[in-house]
Length: 137
Image 1 (cartoon, helix red, strand yellow):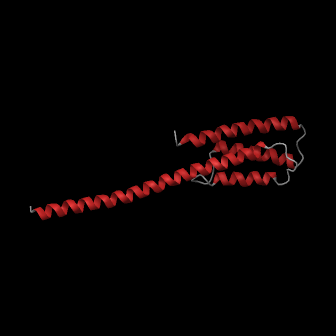
Image 2 (cartoon, helix red, strand yellow; image 1 turned 180 degrees about the horizontal axis):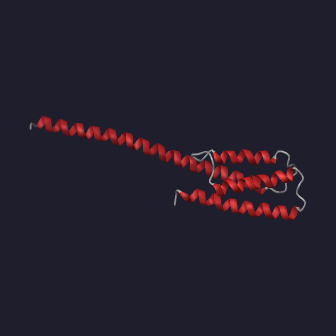
Image 3 (cartoon, one colour; image 1 turned 90 degrees about the horizontal axis):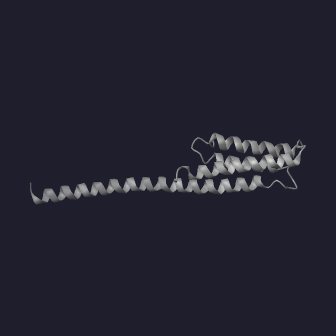
């Protein structure tokens, strides 16, 4: 084998390897960036939802269930299949129903209602925290 053939084959193999490496790194970086963005969006939306449902002393409950529904939909779209995990989905729906009952004037015992809402907010906060740490610990 001549020196020219050896050098050209080494150069070609090195160049091809670099091209493959660049493409693979680009794809991996895009995936990492997307995962980081989703994690940040989950944090923002989870925090907003918790702050929204923690406000049990409101003057007006007319639009409040709608605000909760919109916030929960923002959380659902952050998952691949468009639905949050079952435990989170159930707790968000429970909280929506609690505030809907309050809007409709079907809450007889306000102290009991506030306690139930507070307990469900706590459970949801715990589930949100677990979800945020699931893929990053």
